[in-house]
Image 1 (tube, rainbow, N blue to C red):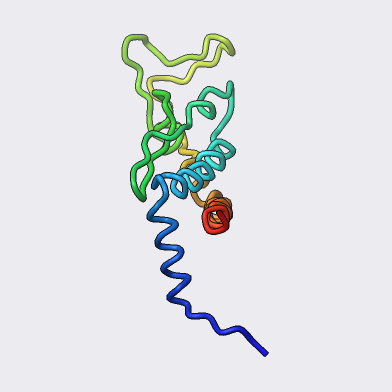
Image 2 (tube, helix red, strand yellow):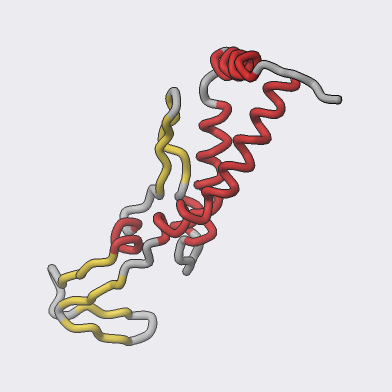
Length: 135
């Protein structure tokens, strides 16, 4: 005993449900997962970098997110900081002197956060689809 079901009916149902959405529900669910996982992988001293990670834009089937502090790129990709107006680079708080330049290794937190967020994004999208298809 079994049930016969034409898969084209399901495809049509899904297409109508997704087409009738505001367009950002699935994208919002996915990008939210990526933002959360990236916040977890961001380096933390004060928490400012972590708190600055947010959604930049969402439209149709795409979204953009990232940090909004000036030092985010060098923390992610690494680089060299050169002295400009002083004789040497120093940390006054710890009385540490670094010389004319400092090399900062990249943390690659954006990539690690994106990779870590894939399974959560898939779960969130599947959950959102279940809500859409059941209601």
